Each structure stands twice: as C-alpha cells, then as structure tokens.
Image 1 (spheres, helix red, strand yellow):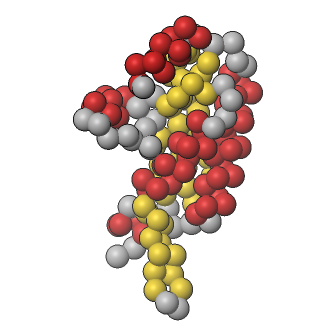
Image 2: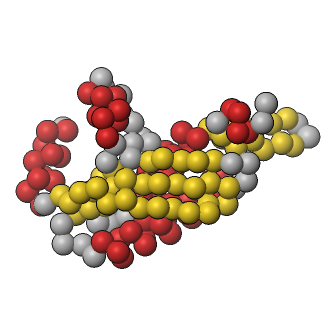
Length: 133
C-alpha cells in the first residue's frame, strides 16, 4: 500500500514504515491555529457539531487536510474575535500552522488556506465558555 491509499504519509527506513494519518496532521494544524491570539475557535460544520454533542472532542474540527507523499495542503475554517485585524491574524495562523506541521511531520506544507467563517463578540465568547464548563 502507498501513503495515498492509506490516507496519510508513509516514511520508510531500514526498520520499516511509519505512517502519519491525515487526522494527525489535522489535529496538529487545528491546535496550532487556535493558539494564535485573535482566533476564537474553529468552525466545524454539522459533522463536528454532532461529534461534540455525543461527548467526543474533535481536535481536527474546522480543518481539511490533503496529504501527499511529501507535502500537504491545509484548509482551516476559523472564527475570529471581534476587533482583530483579520488579515494579520490569518497570516499568523498560516505561519504557525506551516511551522508546526513541518516540524512535527517532516511534510512540506505547500498551502494553508484560512477561511474566516464568523466573528465572536466579547459577550458571546464569555457566555460560550460558561456553557462549556
């Protein structure tokens, strides 16, 4: 089987193979994105919302990853805090995600597309945090 058939990257050595699943790359990208100041969270759509309702935390929520043998393309669907400069925050997200994925997986990240899906106002953000706890 090749890396494309298994849905991830395959690294070969004398000792055998190491496969990195697409979901792992998605989790790395999602965590790196949410650590950027100005990002309120990820926008996961219906499937991500259903998984969270069932009690499963989806760490790859709001991330779409295409992984080839040596490179990856990543789409991030984010929600930003009200008042931030969206273009600057998006550029910081792109740099952070590229750096994290390349350092942890060895893949060359060829593109990081940031899709801003919404804006969270300060009152909404505090109320949402209270509901999560």
